[in-house]
Image 1: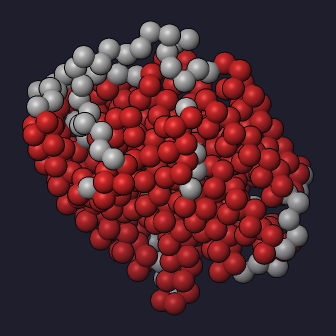
Image 2: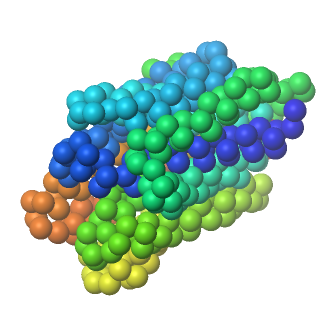
Image 3: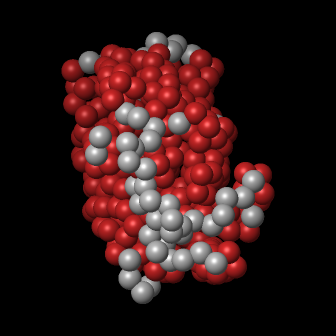
Length: 409
């Protein structure tokens, strides 16, 4: 089994994950009309997923470390695919909240499980591109979800659309269980290690480097979740767009974000094998948060749909530049606890998603504008830049204190 096929399989998983996750934003109006939901109710629906997703991150990562990514990913993909189909059966807000919460718990294992698979199968010098590839898949999946759902809703109702969306994940789960193995036939060489000596899990999560890591990922998800949930409804309502035009516009930031993932992953790996290795994670992330800050500020100034989309593209491209460095950093520092530490970071990011889903409609209705939300997100991006300067210093100090080399594992 080739490690490149492992990356390809996880790319497909990532794509399916985000098609299923982003689809609900596309059916917001149809679902709201059918179930009698307000914007605040839909904010609760979006955030119920984010809450379940956040709460299950560390347990999912621990399970991946303990039992391996083969079993963990098979179980979670089959479970969330079943819940995707069940979404089409709901008739009340209460049931919808429960289903989306459970859906979030199930999807929580996807990326911590992938992180553990990467740790088992890939050398450190390939972690940047691998993470860039699978997260590019997630953005392509989210981008595809908008026109796909628009096409499906032209032919069927939103309930049938969710039934159909359940099928790809069920097929993937079966294929993964039959094909994948937790360890390569020829183990990776480990004579030269780059990861810090593994800490006890509780201590690692409370360590300063991890606190900064979680805080910067909290900031990143304020932008990321906006593009996956409220961006499409915002563009449609703010600029009086038709559903098809809004769906087309909403795909552009996600498509550009996918190219950012791919490009940044390559930059991370190139820097890692150069004399600038200590900056291989921090430099792309700092530049990305700077771009995202500019995009968010521009959203407060622009007044046409095209300029708003361009601003979203800048913000989205920037924040996507931070994802591969973040997950590569967790692999560097986590070692055999990579799944759990990646889960801890993603947990904090998705508590941010939970707050983001509710903060956007609340601030917009309270102030009469989304500008307050955009400015708050820009401020969080600046805080994240500071976090990365500290993360780099802490990682360098920890490696120096433990006498580790900078040679790829």
